[in-house]
Length: 163
Image (cartoon, rainbow, N blue to C red; front, side, top):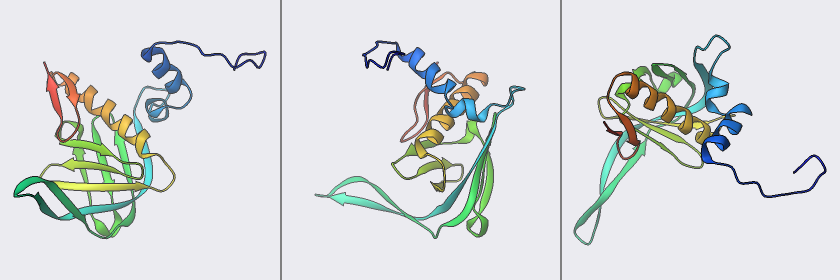
């Protein structure tokens, strides 16, 4: 709405829209301290993949279905170079953004494919899986760029870059 209360459609570019969203608390805004360092933490219910089964239909492999173990309350924390997951009784670890294999969000959770064929699922207690997906994508893209691996063009089913 304008200052006079009139609702008007305004055309702006995607870059400007993203800048405005960030200015109102977007993922990188919340994660970036005044000194430029990055750190962000959220509480989540954390579960780890315990099995994976092939899904067949008509004699053709259509994909895979993960079975997740019990969830435990924990946290996810990121900084410029790493992501840490503390799942309490369900397990914990710390990984470089360069080693994350894929990022996938749904309406209720975020999944990260980790080294060693590990998969963690996070159901946020008071945060947004969409915010975290965007944050992880930006941190991973930045890490790949700094490492000279190219521009990330795909995050699922695996991270892929183009030089």
